Length: 150
Length: 144
Picture 1 (cartoon, each protein chain N blue to C red):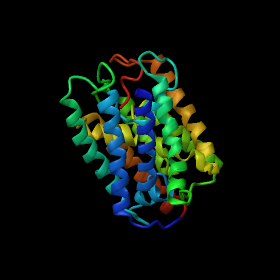
Picture 2: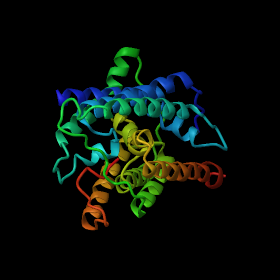
Picture 3: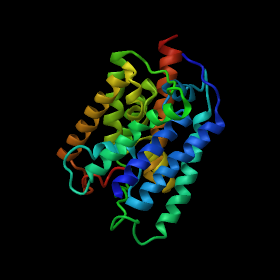
């Protein structure tokens, strides 16, 4: 049942990325191009996603625990440290250069664009490197696997 | 560069679907739908990370374009840069930055903002800022 929810959530998330235009790097880069071919569509993606998630999370938080597991696994980290600032800055540069963030890149795999097939392995290497670095040099807070990721 | 159509309706519908998937994951499995976090869970150490669940979610993401093509009768149209060096560098930056910064557009941008997390709000402001600056440099300064 948990696997079914994971699979269905992944499928719906992926369809959302496709229908919204997030999975088209040209559209993402046009959203980011205020001085050029600006396409404001992605504001609507963010608003739709944030409003639904906000309301749904409020509903979920009224429950003592999730439907299928014992507890909520919420991101533990709350402080704004060097990692959040530096990591987010680098992420934004890569997002701007390619028009891809992690979800759309993975969803694009079966479309077999050459750029996607180069981007995704590089992204996975990047994730692996960051995890190695964080594990080797944990900062003040406890870094438990998975818990610090939003 | 490719001019794209302004699609407020489709983009809202897509955003709602993304939100619905995030809510499903929280309500049933108690987890945020941060894609970089979910990809990170495929890597060791696995303590409490449910790598199997993460892998099934990723399979769902990959299946989406196939379902899209079956339902609409046409494959999803996208324009992806074919520059190998640019995409390799961008992929490294996106993967490293999102994992090091604890989230990406979904984890910080959607789920974190919906949780009213100050950390996610700041992360989102920073990556949007560097993304706008990067596209400006790339299209209007370097490209002339």
